[in-house]
Each structure stands twice: as C-alpha cells, then as structure tokens.
Length: 113
Length: 114
Image (cartoon, rainbow over all chains, first blue to last red; front, side, top):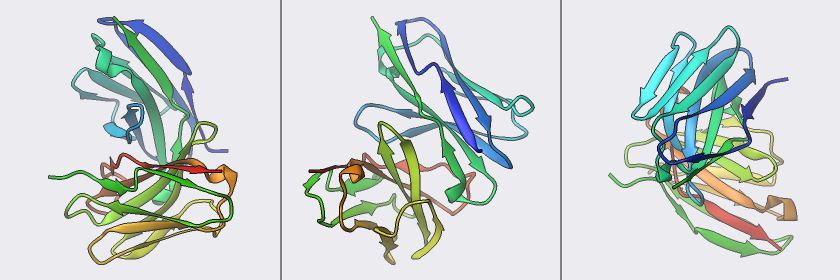
C-alpha cells in the first residue's frame, strides 16, 4: 500500500535552534517528493521538489534531503524563527499524474521565543 | 501577479444541501487541482482540470464534481452534503499539467456542514 509517514507528529523548539523533520514513504513507482509549509488557516506553500536523482535541495533556511534507496526524506530547518511555526507536509508523487499524489499527515512545528 | 483566489472563504450549509466553490488561478496558469483537507484524513486529491478537461480524478464519490471555464477559472460542486464533507477545500494552480511543476495553493474555502 502506498503510504507516506511523517515524524514527529508535533515538535516544539526554541527560536534559533535547528530541527529535522522526517518523511518515510512506501510509494512506487516514485516520481518526485515535495515538502510544503502550511500556516494555520492558509494554503500550503511549496518549499522544495526533488526527483529521484536529487539528494539535496535548499530553499533559504530549509534543506531537504532524499535517499531514494531507503525511501526516506528529511527537512532540516536552520536557525528557526517564530514564523517557521506551521505544519510541514511531505508529498510523494507516483508516476502517472496528479491523482497519484500521496500526502503525509504533516508535522506541526511550534517555535517558541 | 495575483495569487490563487478562492471564494467564498467560509461557508455553512446543512445536510442535503449543495454547494459550489470557486477558484481563480494565477493568471496564465492552465492547470487547476482541488483538494480536501480534514484533521483526520489530511490532504486528499479530488480532481484536476487542464484546458477545461478533467484529466485526473481522486477517490471521491460522484457527489463531488467540478468544471473549468475557458479562462481557467474552476468551480467545484458538492451535492447532497453530508456531515463528513466539513473540511477545508483547497485549490491549486500550475502553469502546465506536469507533476514536476510547482503548485500554488489558494487560501481555501472552509465548509461546515450542520
């Protein structure tokens, strides 16, 4: 069964600290993996998109990694800011089209001063 | 450039009624996708339109339907509403119909069914 599992479910960190969110998937055939940030009451915003051949992709303080062999991805946030408080959603796309998007349940991150 | 807009932002309906939600994509974007987001199920894909044609469909009952107009604006309709249809409905647009393409989400329409 195609699944995307994210951990932890929720996380609290202090402002300025780093953190890493995990995404494990059992999806085949794999096309790409995306990380989204969703602020409360807003739509998701794309952070990174990685294909099978990409290991790392950065977007400012956000760095995503992908290990296609172990089917694991991580999102590392450096020097966290209060504005990083949001849900982070991992999405894996099967080859074949938009109906092949498999969403993770998300990690809710709270950054405290 | 204006982002994806969705109307209305909030909606309250009763069971059995029907509802129509609207989405205006970013100018020039031709692909529009719809998603349902609930606390229990997370984000789930509803359907995707490209150039007025439904190209992909998720696993939702026939009560959920949509369409896209020649200006790429899209509407989603839910008939015979059920309590479980209460959710945030998100629309996303992209330039072309390629899964590599970045999708831009709107703020969503929050639907409450009583």
